[in-house]
Amino acid sequence: MMKKLVLLAVVLLASATFAYAQFTYCSIDDPAGYGTRVRGINNTGQIVGSYVYDQYGDVHALLIQNGQFIPLGPNTILQTEYSDAYKINDRGDVVGIVCDEVACHGFLLHKGVVTTLDYPGASDTYATSINESGNIIGYWDLYDNQGNFLYEQGFTYKNGNFTELTYPGSGDTSAVGNNDFDVVVGIWDTGPTATTGSGFVEWLGQFISFQAPFPDVAYTQGDGINDFGLIVGQEYTATEYANELGHGFLSIGPHFTQLNYPGAMETTAWGINLAGQMVGNWYDSNYDAHGWLIRPFNKTCPKFQVLEPSQFSSTPNAQASGRKISVPTRLQRMSK
Image (cartoon, rainbow, N blue to C red; front, side):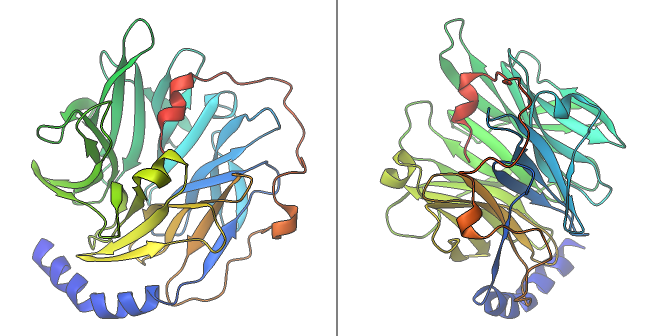
């Protein structure tokens, strides 16, 4: 089966490359919030992410379906604590993070029930992707008693059991995306003081490291991979990384295409499905967050309630909750 998929991917390469050369970005902005981020898209077109609920910066997990913005888990902790959805499979299972005043936890939302996931001994746990078999991947971190970051490592979660996933010789490993063949993508570096980071692909215990082949790239992170092996992610030069600038990318085998939302200060790419539909985030000159969607071979955008640029962010348009959701400062280490 894998050989057939590889051959099909090769056959599709020319047409896919042609289609992506002409893509149209569709901005995604929840009209009930103060900012929107999207990170995952399944094969039925359901999109997950998060929205800033009020002017206090409260963030809650979000589902976008048929052009509608739907809060995820409305009667659960996903709507009372800081939460962000990362990936969704075709069965509607969603994984992400939920943070309280002490720590961040991975979560699985299955048939309306939220289960939190905590790697044994970890300070925080982040669940970042789930495939059709229900296999979950992510990463966990460790801090000392003074709140100093020590390291982070990837994990797989299958049949109720955690297994560490570590790039050989690395100081830190973050597993971010997986597909139905249990191929994993992410980022690794040499430790907390590292000035570079490389993307990786892992399958059956074998690792391949890669860097996006653009000038002066210092950091490359794989965020999503579909069953044809197409990868999306983000890449930065050292200066861009330090100044919260940068670009998304699409990798079709060795062929990389840079993804830049028109006029954005920064663009990140997070998810890709079998149809080649991609989602990610873009940040405007005020550094407010917006989601984006690309649909190959389709130059028209879905009928989201998309805001015009003049309407973005600076004017509140939602009722405040009156409660500031406190999250660990270290959550800011997470990549946009």
